[in-house]
Amino acid sequence: MSARLLIVHHSPTANLTRLFDSVWAGATSPELHEVEVVGRSALEATVEDVLGADGYLLGTPANLGYMSGALKHFFDTIYEESLEVTANRPFGMWLHGHTDTDGAQLGIEKICRGLQWRLVQPPLSSLGPPTEHDLDACWELGAATAAHLL
Image 1 (spheres, rainbow, N blue to C red):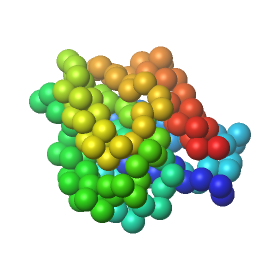
Image 2: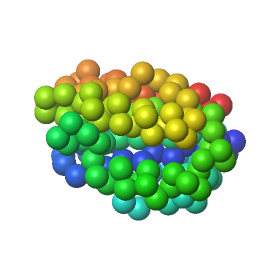
Image 3: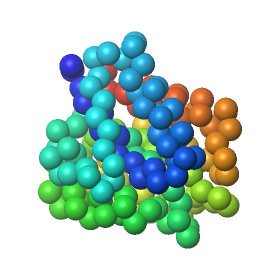
Image 4: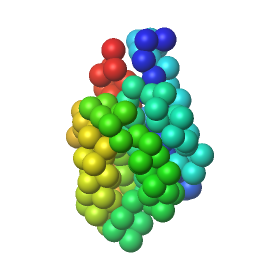
């Protein structure tokens, strides 16, 4: 393997699991066999996972206008030790909400800006039950972010 992609997600519902599964399928497509893909729930991901990865995909529900507490907890536990060491690494994100995802997206962007990570794909926002278009876009997000590591 020439590169490692870490997917950190909080997927507590069937809708979020479907989105994660599509991101995973894209990132692990056979054409990208040189990229090792590691998936961790936001409550299980460690600083060692972050330091050992070359790029990141982040997935979260938008709860009350912000990212999930689980993803915020992930950032809180890895932030200090990841500063400077992970600067300039690529990342992408997907978000799911019922009415909007703007606050969650802004929060993630601010934290990642502090980490000096580079957004390499436009953030993917899904509202309500995932459509086939949403699932296809998640697949593309996973594949494109993984391909960026090659």
